[in-house]
Image 1 (cartoon, rainbow over the protein chains, first blue to last red):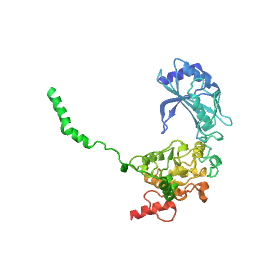
Image 2: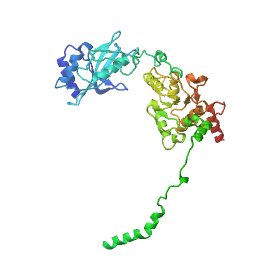
Image 3: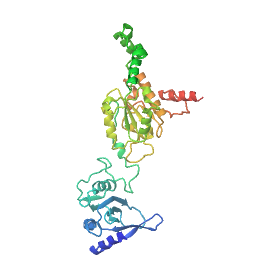
Image 4: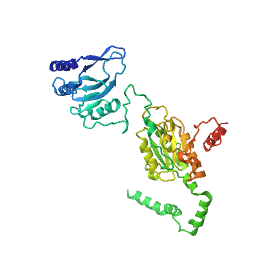
Length: 176
Length: 225
């Protein structure tokens, strides 16, 4: 399997990291042919640079960058999993990279320096989950409005909000 | 070749010329000119009022953010033909519009934009809140969606439906026309928050009340019986 070559190259290069590679699970619980590896946050930049540049891996494209909140999810130790989906156009293989971080200050190094397309995706993850990306050139909220304090895709955030929408200015005929 | 050409020529010179001359313009006479005197114009306005003109030339600003916008387009298109009510001139500049039709859900981030557009509209101005989302938030009871634009700006007519049928929207426009005809620019007691008239859905069943809005329903009811 082509992805296995990339993982072999990765284990060869980074012997001190436990990659813990395993397939993503389908709904019934059986494994799919998509494989993910766990990378600790402090090694993320060098691993990602290796994955993009090495001849055996050559992941030129960051397809997606998102996050999962594992609050009260059975069988997990960490809270936030920042997920990177990589695609190699040269070899035609894919790899999922997960980087787990925790409260109170979840921080992941930014990969904008490696893939430029990560810019807005990291801003979205920051906006929705509150995971800060260190080294990001312009880490502002991208979807919600300025002055919004919360991170609404966290599992402990109520769907109807915390009263943010009640605090807007009201316009009447006299005032306009 | 030569023969055919001459024969065609002779045809024009004969009966054809005479037929053309029958439709030739005659010199203009005094009967062809309609003159309007200034005092008859003044009489017209005295009789019908400026509000008559206003109600028959509402220029809507379509603030269409969702599927209600599609029904709004259908209302303006040939089958339902909003032009019959003089309201077909959709203006995308608030300076040139006097009826704001808010069609669709409004996110909280969008609300200042809508308020600003409303502020930019010149008096006289009216607002239709079209559809469940604009009126109440609809199914989108989330942190990011405004639960009814009337919380933050005046609304004159609510048009229910998800999305409303074009007939219902036309009822809404007609309710605005009745407001314009009756009250014009001058405000009523409710004016600070808008009139807040609720239109009945197109095939209406109930016929109670005597508000401006339920007239539409009553008429519909009678027609059904």
